[in-house]
Image (cartoon, rainbow, N blue to C red):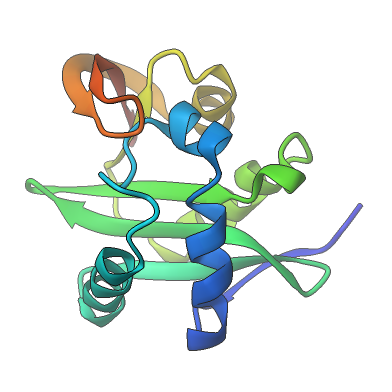
Length: 157
């Protein structure tokens, strides 16, 4: 099994993050993505804001030292939430679950929430294996699908 680790997200990682977050299969599955995944200017502005905010804990995920994704926690509407994005080439290897566990060792805020497209079974499973339980649903606009979809809200206490 590979060694999964977290480190600070560096400038050298941004091209890989941009590429990963443009993958059409991943964008559709994640659903709640950038309005235009191909807009590098908007991506750079967003990442700059995310990286500079003291409310955000953003980490690069590595597998045997190679960049494979991101995991983060952030403040949203009075709650702390988590998010992750793993390069599709590494799906199904337990990397999202492991990286989320590592992040939760760093961010001790509880309760902490997560949101997932209700039909994204794999991502929901990652959250549930990490101890998150569903607390509700919302019907929200998903830019990755260009329509409103059902979103499940989960919480870890």
